[in-house]
Image 1 (cartoon, rainbow, N blue to C red):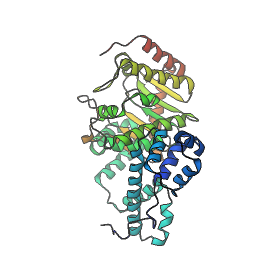
Image 2: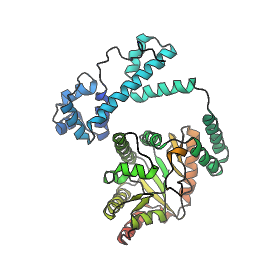
Image 3: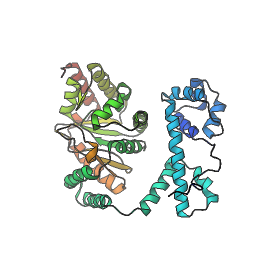
Image 4: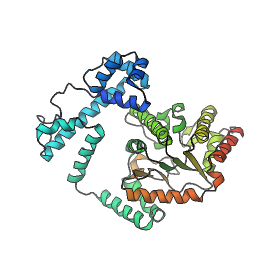
Length: 374
């Protein structure tokens, strides 16, 4: 049980955490303090004090700042709550480790990511090895020894038994996407990120996973962060994605994106048009079209990590949170093995089905063929 007299990381608990959240959003947009000030009607000097934590904005100013980023003011309130909970958990961790309290203020200055990493590392050191950990290690050994293709059945079974639930999957995917290295993915539906603003993301989440997210506001932030990360990768890297050709063609003709998800023709048209735009303007954005179904769904970032996603249930059309849906591998060796598997499939696709120009032409020809409806 936590000692309530020692579970505060900072001596001055009036210091707030909204500032770092504002700074993170501002830097993600590539704005200066002056740029943000012009958008929300607040002086750059005052914004600087907010970001440093020396001033706490009124709700009206906070609402103006939030509107500039197209987020709800509740986002900052939730960020504040989460940051305080994390600091309290970190303080408890430092107490358990016997770290002198006189040094705790140094940990208070770390980023939330660094604080979370300390807490998670301590948990891993003190928790007994579970059956899930043993099984995951065993299947990773098989992946490294025999390759991904030979381990597919074990991977699928393990993902169903121990896999991340949809909300954890969304959280880990956002963390993975935010790494700046090249990405690779195999998906059976046309990714919505190129035109994420067109879609009701809550509808997409519910239709994909069959459950509701705990926090719809956080879902919007995750999607926004993923799109921003994708564009950042494309500034100097590559994003390769393999799709099943027939499924993409069917989506363009019917609007059928997945079980219980049917988009209107106008949405489909804009979605595909934005995808084509990326293909024609960003050489690093690449699509490979397979003549058969994708053998597995996954997303990875070079040496950073990979998410292995279970096949869809043919009866329900989604993965179902009760049986798990994704395994996360973070060792560079495992990620490299998944990337080698992906590269083999990518190289097996005819050049005419993975060239930016020919894929863009094909998508446009499918659009021109017209919408057939349900």
